Length: 96
Image 1 (cartoon, rainbow, N blue to C red):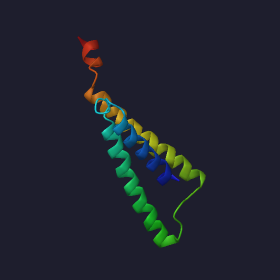
Image 2: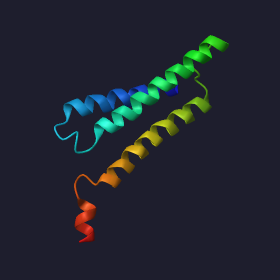
Image 3: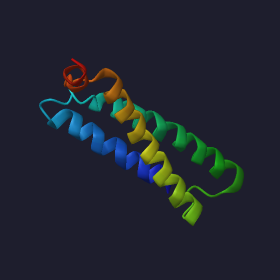
Image 4: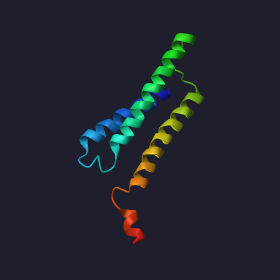
């Protein structure tokens, strides 16, 4: 379940990165890289689980909760990077 959720986030963020004209201003490439890296790691984890236990997808409630947590954490890291770099300069204007 979490492989599907994080891959869906990776696809959406990559498409938005290519479509939106100011995507570098909002650091969509950072969100895309975070989500694709996580998707690759989760795929490797699922592949090892399949080799060991014979189960590739876990559709339990715990897997759904973990999917939400992973997506929210990726979005949190992206927003944190936006706050730290302040691409629009709003914090600089408020402080001066």
